[in-house]
Length: 290
Image 1 (cartoon, rainbow, N blue to C red):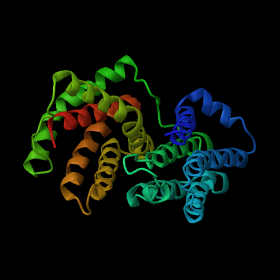
Image 2 (image 1 turned 180 degrees about the horizontal axis):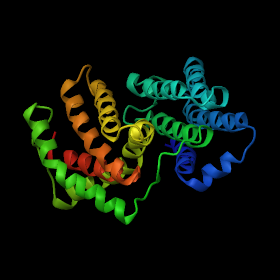
Image 3 (image 1 turned 120 degrees about the vertical axis):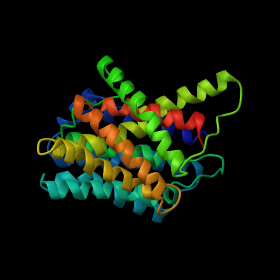
């Protein structure tokens, strides 16, 4: 824990900085662009080095793999032109380590009760955010941790409208089963609230940025319906790797969710709106289903 704490604190600083517009503006002022890429690259390696040397789990091959992966993501837009084909390649590169679960092999924990690979997931998310919004200068619409009042309302309305059809589909294809969390009400409520904000600020923030703020936004001007459907299909496909491949049930539910999230984003142009819907859905699943 003494080794994990400073690594997580440093990663938390970098993660918060990638989401706050003021910090991204500071990074954007560094010139040339390759200096920004070098800063991102070093920041990606620092938490791993602090933890691995502190716990004695440093492995040269793991470090080389991490350095190579983070270099590709950090320098992608510093070396390649800003074109649609390269944007697609960036998204593929960003998704590959998450789908292959490579961080569990890189971040070795000295204790079986400590899942240290979350350090790698947080690093990868904020590295992708910074590369897209700073080096690529992509505009995903309104983005950040805390939704505005209109975004709270709209996101909640889409959750209330869609939750019954989503539950019916998930139960109908046997993707989930009803099993409410056991325990006193305050414990169940605490888990539900904790799940909501954990999803809102990490999972929903990253997934809604990439699937809605990038993929859907790139096509919105051509066809709103097409943009929603394509982003939803890709979002559903990403869930094929959930637990076991191919997980068609979770992919089908994911596509329906993607349609709901996509409509919410198209209506407001804000990534924070589908983040709210997304967090409510996952919190409901965590409390009521297995």
